[in-house]
Image (cartoon, rainbow, N blue to C red; front, side, top):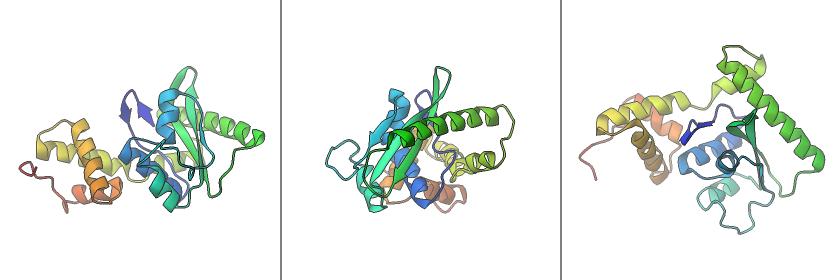
Length: 191
């Protein structure tokens, strides 16, 4: 989910691979969901292994996780794009016409569900899945703590969290939990 230029990360994943896909995009600032949100059009990469240079940071670890094709659809409420929906598969190939149509309907349902949740309503099992996330609450709590530790804005602290996680081959949510539980502290005197 996104708002203006601020990425709020994922509000739901279905398995470990989809969690990794979202984590990579959140950490690296590149990938199909970001493109779908920014361009407000569906993004299709039916052969992630084909050399394209499209997402140089995202592609290698996604391939290593078994992703061979990935598709992202903007989540719209009227004329407003509120995020995007990623779908992946473990084999290369285009979506069929019916699969593409189903994905568009799924994106519409997810967008409406998010709006319903924001309005304070619930929508059954989907509500529970979308609100579970994968540690985003720790990420924003950690960003606040890093902001205070370094004397920087929360936005800059979030960038530093992402960079530190990437440089140390950690997941952002894992690093954030360590910051919140005071196992990791950012030192303002370190360069």
